[in-house]
Image 1 (cartoon, helix red, strand yellow):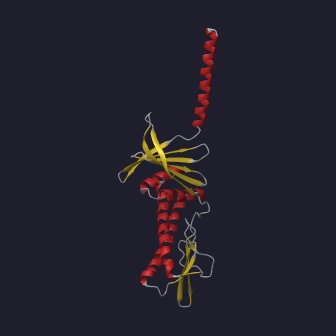
Image 2 (tube, rainbow, N blue to C red):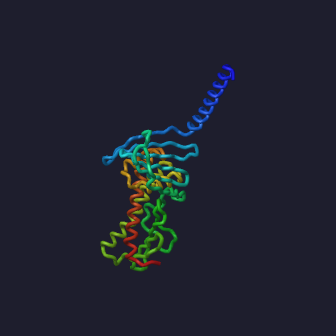
Image 3 (spheres, rainbow, N blue to C red):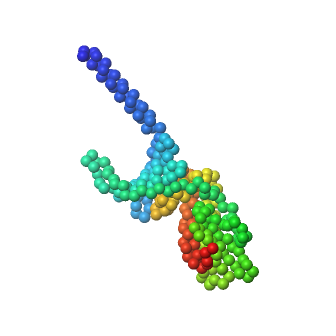
Length: 262
């Protein structure tokens, strides 16, 4: 090979490398740039980064100051949370992790975007209509009466009829706690969706909250903003709604013992 041919070949290889690198760089840059925020709560510092992949999925990585982390893959239909335990550094100084847990939360796109019965006090006893928990339609209640007898019907997986006029004051308060928890949850939900969030977005918010409810609220709100954009106050309404839904679920388990299954 002549010296000139050798130079030509070297230039050709260099040009090929540049083209390949350019294509690769172009492909990578098609995803959105990574945005990062740092928030502290309860003595722990959380570094929260987010990026949008080419398929539209949002990837949220949350790393604590002890280097443990979890990754959220937020798609249209599911949210996948993968936890990683930090186990030290590799030979090149890179952080090494082992997967410790993985959970999948389906997004229920059938969830309502508002509550039409937030202020309702009674619904026809024989009607199919009930006041439902908007962010979890499995829970519901309705009032009714037969002569001097007053009843509360409640439902989730099973349905129960509770006679309330002859209950002790403590048990009446327990029943009131259940119905008020549903109304309060629905009221907060309605405030949240008033910010023009689509059904899928609202349902995705609920799924993400369910997966990460153990986080301090300020951290959870930051993660929600990273995943869906918008204002923190919007997500505080959804978190409040979720809290009340947990209260409703706990009350349901308690007061169903006061009635009979039907």
